[in-house]
Length: 501
Figure 1 (tube, rainbow, N blue to C red):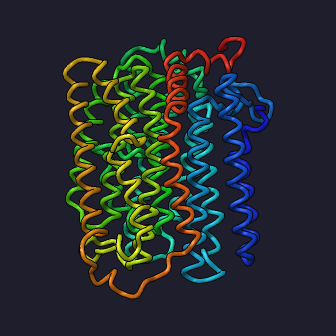
Figure 2 (figure 1 turned 45 degrees about the vertical axis):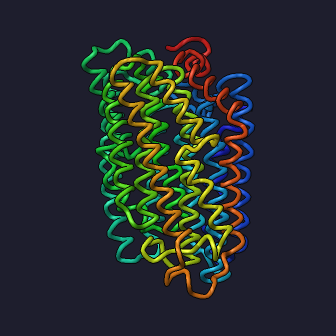
């Protein structure tokens, strides 16, 4: 089974090479891209079943045993992230194909889109499977290099300007990450995470804390936690709708995944738990207050994206079994729901020509299906019972109450307030854009929404509802994943069956 491990990385890379060669045959490009991501999803599902039943799946690349060689590891957390990311990237790809055909016919999307999108997918999957810090860095750089191209597609002045901010911030965070990797190697003599799990414990407390804070700084920028999140609301809304959707759904979650992985495997014990809880509370509140002040759907959703990252950091900061399980569940939920909302914003832009709330109105009357596609994930994001957003938040708030103490209690209050403000924001968008009398943008003759764009959005809405239906089994998986993260032994023994050298 471990022979399957490289496929989620290799298949998208091979697909990228083929689609680049076949730039003059857009139909073949589309077929290869869809086939490659469908294969990745199937492999990820097999790996998840294997990891859940039998423990982490490990492969030493090239036959070089760890810690000398590169090792790929798919435990329950990594495999679950692979499945969700593969499903989301496949749906977004189908959406972008529909959008391209509607815009400029058979030659769309532009030829560089498919190979770049597949390279981005390979970077994301490599980051999830990385068994050492340097390979994790490589995964980040692969996805960032592809994202630099995607965020500036079209070459408009606005996209170049905001894309430049994104590039600068990403490079600076990568420099911090690379410096952290070098310092970790200098202090321990290894970058293999299973080996680091034991060697870092032997370091002086001050050195260990400095390394932990440097890695948190690098990952915090990538995850867009406050106060390292100012770049995101200006960068994401200007990109094409499919690009914004996949960025919002996945790229920040790779940063969250890295925080979960390093804080549990490399730095257990909650040394920075208080810091993480404070950051989580500020991220939730300041992000949602920013959303309240917005009048454009894309910028509004960008601020809710920042805000709800705080829920995930809340669970990590608690460092309890219930907190980690709730955080993992919320990551899965948020990847799906936030991506869906950005795809809906793209549909609104196609139908009405704008996402500015001042120009919208009456969409529920002129496009009732579009109203449903917005309403369901919006209520899910707000945490309306019995949807998965409510279940994920309930799990996190219960973990906060169980932890006791003033700070966790304050975070519970902040989480509840953020949920109510999210409901207010979602209701405001519904009332203005969908419920009130039609405005100029929606009073024009109807624009037929491309079938493939609508179908991909419907699939993600259905996936969000499926998370509610399957919440029980999903919580079982996240609880097992959280237990393995806290114990650390299953991961270390899977990489070094005979004990760490």
